[in-house]
Length: 112
Image 1: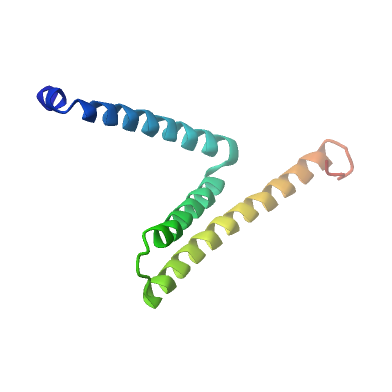
Image 2 (image 1 turned 90 degrees about the vertical axis):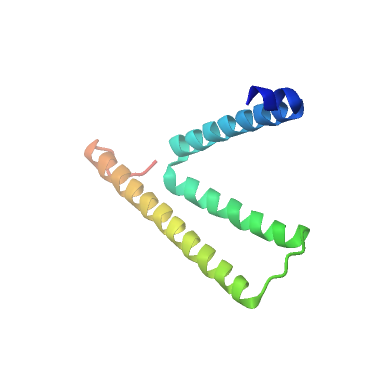
């Protein structure tokens, strides 16, 4: 490997950039899941993938058949549905828990 880097020094730069971007990407993923939860992260990643596919179709002018378009719509529709369903179910559970905890504390059920 060292011989290859000596012959092709530009490759070392590409490897360093790749390592830095990969590590920082993992940090962003970890922080997003920590702050917002895995469901929000799933919605974010699904949106990113969908935009990536659409931009690829537009920039590189890939031919899109009706079957491919239907497949993309079905797959991303299901993923969005599952992600949003999970997100809203957790929101409802959080609201119910907050109300229950608030009522137990003697605040009379007033949500803040």
